Structure formats: structure tokens, C-alpha cells
Length: 460
Image 1: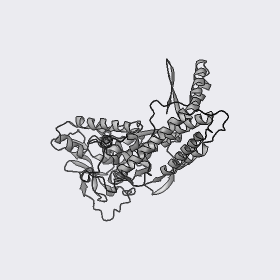
Image 2: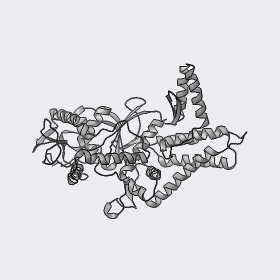
Image 3: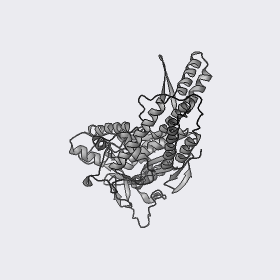
Image 4: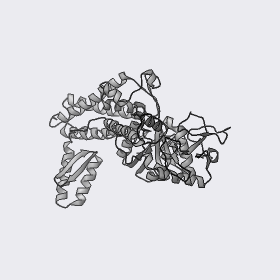
């Protein structure tokens, strides 16, 4: 299966060819933990989860890194205002972030590095940049000179004509298209947390954090870097500059960015009363899986207009899918009926996802699959084999979508039979057969966990 993504860097649809065959290294920009994440943030995190789940379903081994930014201007401002230590302040919102991720059925990344735990790596990268002549110091802070990096602006397509060197930014964020040298190490100010460094007391700038942490966990060159379109400039542009200046190698092969979420056709804003966190929505009685379905249902490169009416419809859809699963599990097939072939639904879904995550087309194949099964059950023309195969197919779909509750999930009979045969092969020391059966079970979307008491079969 050929997989293609639109690479923000080139502006073209490109075939996905990872650095190492069968393996994907993926860095996804995580939260800045100064408040609860809002639904615009979660639109990006759910897109990244969909990407991860699809790559795993396509047979790749995925190593995902999602950073936790726990040192940054807004964090310092708000922690000082509340009279709390940096750790106490950020730990509260970090815990809330992981709770929300669990409610939205977002799979765990392999690594969640915190910026404050990787300052040494950031200092080391700044020292490399300094040794190569890319930095200068002013008033105790260290800056990256963008005029010395010839490819600056290639990601965001910013025109550098007329940019004067020496204009600097100390702040972590600034206005789109306002190009200036950016800070790598900020001089200490009284009342702020600080670390000792060869550049003096201070703290890292925001941009160096991701470059240092991605290098530690994924290497100097890796496959996918993703985030929201608001990260393209300045954050991702600056990541490219400092990473490639330090290593002399290509930083990221594929850049993927999700578009903005708007609410009621307006920019989300507290002043407009249309600003929502997940907790705001659950307080209104909405279910997290309905939120998940709505946020993933539009293509990641298209703006998504979030409305409460749209969320109500998404909840109804998730409910119908859950009722379909239960009906399929409870259905008593009639003997002698013909079998159904689900290949075209599965292949249609996979091919749509392989085409730059074309979720709208993928969902149309999924819903057609459900309509076909419902028609067969209405006519009592569904065989036992077809029902079991359909339950397996449903799990394969949901391994990517993640919209069904997995607690108390009924394992299809054919999977249980394979697991029983595998256990028998293992107990009789026929290990090659046991391994073959384990691989077959995995290919169908399930895993077998062994213990002293026996084994358990679970969805992947």
C-alpha cells in the first residue's frame, strides 16, 4: 500500500518513505502546561493520534515523542501570580492534560519528555551552535542569527528580503511574518527560575527545547514532525534552523500541520463566550467520544467549524456505532446462509487513509460497511462466519478511529479459537506454531497476554 502525505516543507503530496523501513519516528508538539488544553489543541492531538493509529495499522512500528513544555513565559507569569513553584503549578495542569487524553481515547506516546528535565541537552546544542558561529550574545542572552542560515524561511515560505540582522526577540512567541533573530538562552531575571550554564544564569528559549528533545529520542534526522498551522512560524521554522545548523543534516523528512478550529464560524475566544475545554463540554453533558468523533471527522488540512449542534450529531453517530456493535454481538446467525466479503470496505478505508489521511472518504467506507451488515441482519441473511469476521473488521476499523468504548469488549469467537490453539501449541512446546498463531492474532487487531494463570485476549 502506497502512503502519501502533503509535506508542508515542499508544499507537495509526497510518498511516505521513512528513514528506516518499517519504522517511524514521529515528534508531535505537546501542551504548554499553564492551563487546561482547549478543543483547538485537541483537534491537533486527535489528528496526530489518527496518524499514529493509521501507521500502526499499516504495519509500522511507531516511536512517538510528545513534549511537555513546562518552562515558558506564560508559565512563569501565571505561577508567580499564583504564588506557586514552577513544579507545583505545571504538575497540576500536566495531570489534567493526561486525564483529558485518556477520556478522548488518545493513545499514549512512547515518550513524554519535559523541558525542565532536558536543560542539559539544550545547553549542549547551544554550545554546538556557538562553536559554529551561529550565535551572538547581548545583555546576557544568547541569540541565533538567522541571516547565517541560508534555508531560513523554507517551511513557512517567508520572504527574508530586507530583513536586518541584529533585530531580536526575547519573547517565546511573536507575530506571524515578523522575522527576527530568536533567543536560545534567556538571561536570568529576578524572581524567575534559572539554571547555571556557560552563558550565565538563565533559562532556555522555547524553540531550543523541541530541537534538543527530538534529537535525544529520535536522532538528528527523523520521519515526521507535526503540529498545528500556528506552529509553522516561528516555532517550527526556528527548530529547523537551529537543528540543521547544529547537525549539518536534514532535520525532518515530512512536516504535517493541522488547520485551525473555529467555533460558530468565529475565532475561539473567551471574550466571545465560545472558548471550550473538554471539561467545559463534559460539564454541559457531552461525552468525550462524541468530541473525539467530531474533531477527527474533518480532514486535518481543512478548517473545522465546531458547533454544539455538530457535537450533538457526532454523539448520535457514536451512539449508533455502539448500538451496531452490540447488535452484531447479540445477533444469532441462521444456519446455511451465505458468507459476506468485507474486503472492499477494508481496502477502501485503508486506501483513503493512505491518501493523506482522507478521513471523509474513509468514514464513508466504514458507514457503508455498517449499512451492509445491518441490511444482512434485517434479512436474517448473515452467517456465523460472517458475523465473526464482521466483528474482527469492526475492531480493525476502530483500531484507527478509536471511537468505541473498549471496556467489556466481546472478543469474536474466531479470535478466541485462535488463542486457544496457540495456548495448546505453547503448552505442548510447539513454539513455532504458537508464534505463528500469535502473529495471526496480531494481524487481526488483537493481542494475547500470557500470565501464570493462563492468557488474556485484548484488542490492540
